[in-house]
Length: 259
Ligand SMILES: O=C(O)[C@H](O)[C@@H](O)[C@H](O)[C@H](O)COP(=O)(O)O
Image (cartoon, rainbow, N blue to C red):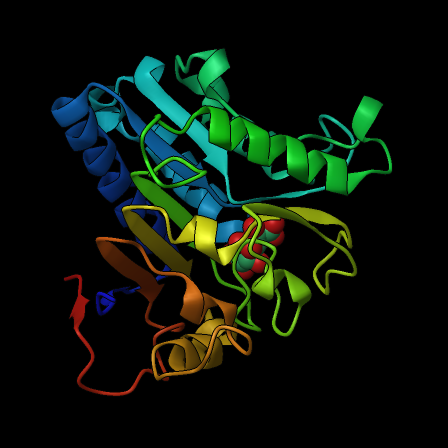
């Protein structure tokens, strides 16, 4: 397993701007190499701020948005269009402002229609959608995402994988989560094996409240206690932090502070 890279930024705004620039470059490079790219988005303050920074960036036109597949790492299981849905916030922050191909944007199902009251059915549907997008001949049920972004909770959760929850031990690609300590209580989430199918996993954390979880994740804690510790990419695991979230890091880590 690759050792994580850590990049520290002076504040949350700079973190979001830097993550946005990094994302634009990474997606443009993937498209230059293969003609298309894929990204997994996260909810939460830093994740959405990063998308808004992409929207504001003149460099955003370096991405061929029509050749980008957009997935989500988790979703709050709420009615379509609910302001609290990660999809709603991602569309408002970025996706409604760039020419994505609608058929290449893959939101997790909302609580409506056949999925009303049935998050398990919604999770299964998303697993089927991921599998359908997986090239034949690979030994995986999910695509190899170019970049999978994750916010990090103060308890070390990523996506909707919370410490000690059964979802952490589930071998399926996508699961429903009940009794989430972070509202709303019912969610849909990729599991750790699916997260780990990404070429690069980026973990975004800002603020003093995340410092203990960041320290534990980077100092050997296990994924049951600190789910972020189990989130690593096949080629790269990158922690993008602000000074406050990095304030408890042990010395000697591969940390590069931006000027
Ligand atoms: O649905 C969600 O809430 C997110 O996917 C969740 O995993 C979030 O990324 C973290 O809780 C960090 O959120 P903040 O960046 O707002 O602290």
